[in-house]
Length: 225
Image (cartoon, rainbow, N blue to C red):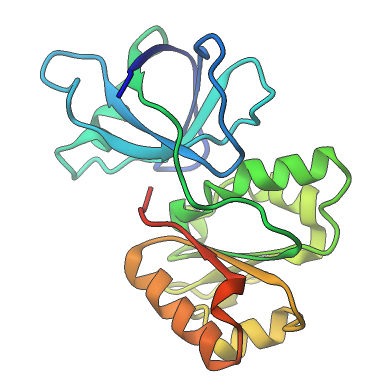
């Protein structure tokens, strides 16, 4: 698979452990909102250690953007990304991914699993088609939420936060389950886009099916960011 070298132009921390990288874009590089690519750090010993990360920029933008949760305790790619500086380089492969926008619906995200939904929602906003969509964003604590203002700007009251390990004003507490989905979505024929840690995806899919959501209306991905 062909590799492309890209250079970091800007690094922004969105919260305590989520970093946004803006990079150069290879010539004629095309992808669809929601897709990802395998990324490795262009440093000795790390070139062949790849992880899938979602493009959070729009396909039409001049630069690429990745929004990545950094794990300092992990001896791996995400730890290395936390050490990167402007001017450092990455290797990316070809785009891939199963999460594609199919039509109006609800986005159910766990942590960094929200990343495929970022460009999809930005695309809908640019086309004035965001109304009628809902994002339910599950995190452990309030400090883990990121892009809160952006999601509010796009969706307003249809952006819903739920925290599993903390009770705070303005946020729901608990997990995404059948009851919560029923209370905050319209179960008439719509799509449910699900992304997050594997156990979360499995649980949410089970909960959706338990309330009668047809399998072909559940859109998910095969990997976790």
